[in-house]
Length: 247
Length: 323
Image (cartoon, rainbow over all chains, first blue to last red; front, side, top):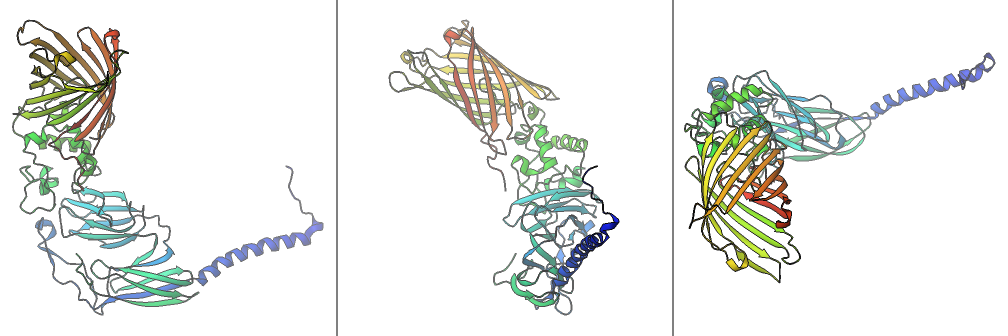
């Protein structure tokens, strides 16, 4: 084979230099990667509210035998110290991580579980049921367009669809009208606040960002945060009732 | 299966009236034979598998295609058909797409506008005719019809004229239980409303009995018509024989499908072929259009090439898709 460079013993010094150079470049690359993540910051915080959590259970109007007489109203979930669950915090301008795993929504106890999740436009959603009753998982886009409606007549079946929309996708069940679920299909990075209201967003490049915070019942808010290299930016977000009644 | 998977919206008795409705639209009343029997099984299979929007119906009807097998869906359809308890209604599986010339055997509630344009010879110039047809069903198997053709001539400047108006009625004589064959008979009365000296008919009142048949042969439909014309003054004298045969195929199962077909059209000893295309204009299929060209093949010197078509509106069905 032609073109093969053979390094003779007489070139040992240049060989070492070449090896050192190659190793150096490699180390620099690995080092650079670590340096880059060390440069990223974190946005950590808590979503709170003074609005009392929903305590009145919802009356079950169909299939009482499977769903029970009532189901809990989970539209406003507030813990003992005012932490608000199921708020979606979106970081405008920070690209969502490429997510290859589908999200899973279960019709369980005649409720959509989890109630609120994040995905991205075109993301896959798996729908299943744990209830021995006819459920339908009907998704609507923000503009009211129906995206899909799948019947799950038998528990244990899993049906996969795609979220062909951007923004808030609302899930309803056409046989159990109290059921609600939400998926934020976002191109920006987004997270859902935990039961305590807390959230954490890692891998944020330094800079100034606008956070958009959404909740199914409370007034959306925005917050501007500055993220420093390697720092943790704390933010407290309070949500209030909307000026107009939100249905 | 029906109780567990359908009755919560469609009701145990198929009427769609439930004590606690969970959907905002009124589901189809399966006990209403006039609404359900004209629907082919294939349309119902489509909606059950893919949900309402595939046929322009509400998205509140979900798709069961991921959870039920084809066999289960067929079984559900067979059960749902039993909610119509009057056996004399012909079923939608023989409700074939309407050809341009061949009259269809299945009774319809529709309005059809049929334009035709022929390029005349040098003397006569071109001629256009627009025919308006109104069809309305009666009973389980009958249909009335009134049709009025209006001629527009291009020769020697514009002239228009009403041709002979026709009143008719037809009745389904036979539709077999497996529902792939249909035979209807009917009669039309042609009234001399046209102006005789302009060549618009206007000669005499004529009686036109006819027979219509339709068959499904795998994916194709074959439709035939045989009609004879006799003047009322002497019904033993046959003045015209019309015979049409159509063979065609829907290219998909959707109500908005394209269809292709070809007709053999005969009037006495003049024969023509009419290749044609048809398209459902809305998702519900309640509006449709067809276009073709009638090409003379036998005794061509006594016929003209005609550009023909129709615009059809089934006025009892929803035109636009539901949200």
